[in-house]
Length: 310
Image (cartoon, rainbow, N blue to C red; front, top):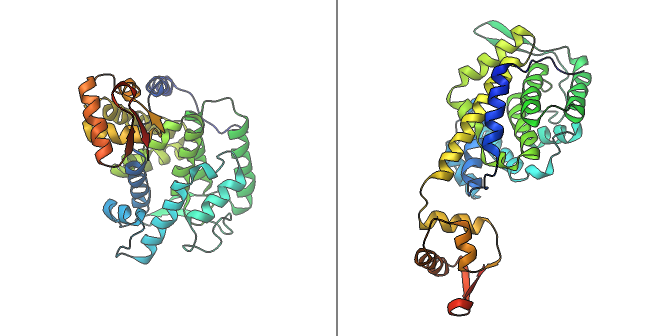
C-alpha cells in the first residue's frame, strides 16, 4: 500500500529546483570532509558528544579520549559510511544488516526488529506512540515494497521512507540515525552526488524544525509536511555545494580535485580541460608543484610530457 502523502505545489516546485541543481555537476573532492560532518551531525542529534576534530582523529585510526559509548557509535558509523556501496536500499535484509553494523555493541538484538512496545516521551508527555510490535514486520515489508515498486522519483521516496520508518519505529534504538542513513542510500543510488551532501548537518543545526515536521506529519496522518521539510533541507545542501563548486580554486584545491578524479595518466591539456579558466602557464606551475609534492611523476619532455598518478 502506498504511504499517504500529497504532491503539493510547494513540493513540486522544490522538487524541480533540486532536480535542476543536480544536472551536470562534477563530483567534488569533499568525500572525507562531508563524511565527518555527516557522522558528527547525525550522531549529535542522538546526543553524541564527540567533536568533528575527534571524529577526524578516529577516521585516521588514532585514539581519542571520550565516553566509550560515544566512541563506539562513531567507529560503527565510520565503517558504515566507508562502505555505503555494500548496502542495498531496496532490500529489507540489507536494512537489518546496516542496523546491526550501526548498533553493534551498543544494544542487544542489534539488527532485529523490536520485541516490545515503544513511545517517544517529551516533558512527561507522549509525543508519539509507535504501532504495536506485531505490526512492525508487515509495515516494514509494505514500506520496502513501496520502495521497489513505486514510480515516484527517488527524492520523494527517500523522504517518505525516512518519515514512515520513524513512524513505525522498528527498532528499540537507532531509528533516527537509520532513517537518515537510509534516505542517503536511496538518494545515492539514483544520484551519486548525494554522497557529498551532508544534509544531516542542516538538520542538526535546527533540530526543532526536524522534530516539528515529524510531529506535524504524525498529526495530519500523511508525510506531506515532512517531505516539504526534507526537500527544503536537500535544496539548501545542494545550493551550498554549488557555492563550493563555483568558488575560485587555488593551486592546492585544483591538485586535490584532479587527484580525486583518479586519471592514471594525463598531460597538461587533459589538466586544462578540467580547469578551463586557467592559463597554460598556471597549469604548468600546478603540475610542477604536483610532482614536487609526490602526487604524480613526470615523463618525457616539452610537448611529449605526460604525468602518471602515484
